Length: 480
Ligand SMILES: Cc1cc2nc3c(=O)[nH]c(=O)nc-3n(C[C@H](O)[C@H](O)[C@H](O)COP(=O)(O)OP(=O)(O)OC[C@H]3O[C@@H](n4cnc5c(N)ncnc54)[C@H](O)[C@@H]3O)c2cc1C
Image 1 (tube, rainbow, N blue to C red):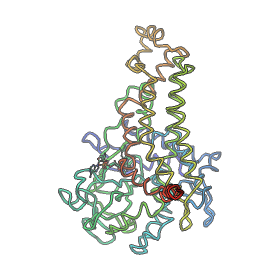
Image 2 (cartoon, rainbow, N blue to C red):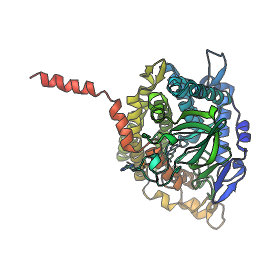
Image 3 (tube, helix red, strand yellow):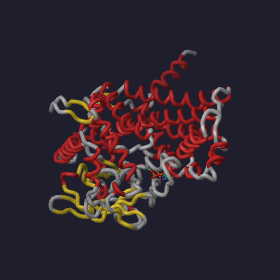
Image 4 (tube, helix red, strand yellow):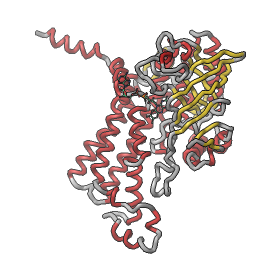
């Protein structure tokens, strides 16, 4: 398995990342990206530690070789359980705050490899490309990010009727050995941190969109590919103490521009097929597997949130009050336990189609549908518990080292069960979660990481067993 040092070295590859109008050199040394990259490197090291390998690796029965579990094509509930443990390993170092760790798109590529027959419909060479790239990514433990939702521009029109050609990524030309891609793709989280990108569309394409009907992979450093991150949150933070999350766990969303990027045929999975682009995520187990990762990650985040809430009450000695316990029990513990049960249900009741196990869609989509509501409820509950605590904090950690201010802080900022420094440390952590720009992005991520609520709800509608529900009513009606 890949080491952290290997990962760090591989990112200094000449990639074109532009921040504030200027090209960034080595991203691993830039203050905006260095710390989140270091966290990912650290997780590679955790995953390859000998004591972790029974959870983080599996032996491929076909080759007898050991690979990261994130690349396991699941055949059973046990395999899904192994994947869950691997997802937890990747989620825990960031407390579930980094969603697009390497194990996310590994779900998509593993699902594609297990369902190559879909890509074969465009010609077996495309199925071959999928499997070959999957094997390479698995063997080299590649970090792949993806952009599969186009920029918003004009949502009332399909790709080929946007205000200008190639606002969305499409094929501008065919050359010997490959295609030329032009356009831009919307949010591609972790592009700065990743080795490769997978680019396609999960938003439905329509007849006429053939120039855009592509699925392909490309290295981040491909000539002509430009990465435009949104404002990174690590930049400008005063210290880890003041911004413990913003400064360490920003996975950095980015827009990707393709300025005539050459993509060799071997990296193309779908070419000019509206049907196959539309089918790839849902006909294959890709959507359920990738979102299973998101749900597992979210359980880690829920545990973190529950812990924040409890510690918030404890620091002011309020945790034994009946109203506080009711809030912790009803608003927080019940939500966390319900969500955990959904993830377990998805894993233990897999839908096994053509030998590949998918976490049960009914529970995956129930989790996704609830997730965006839970996060709002949880954040509101934490804010309720905090009252005005955040707004009473010193402006920065420096106040504790100044001889002029230290005594006041130590006297007045204390809690019932904690020293001033301990209490301020905790409250700044909670505020970074609920109130800073990083915290706001976390909320937006849980609301939109997959799709807008109506789209998720429609998936849920299709996954629920309505026939059984209707039969119950028919039985009742038939009784009289
Ligand atoms: C923090 C973050 C990280 C993300 N990371 C990734 C990533 O790594 N890779 C990736 O591919 N995507 C990523 N996404 C993108 C995500 O997939 C999209 O944002 C999501 O699918 C929603 O699409 P959208 O942003 O275009 O919003 P829209 O679909 O445009 O939705 C915005 C609002 O408009 C409404 N709306 C949309 N269309 C219509 C219409 N025709 N009529 C009326 N109302 C409409 C929706 O209901 C919603 O309320 C990320 C998103 C966020 C917020």
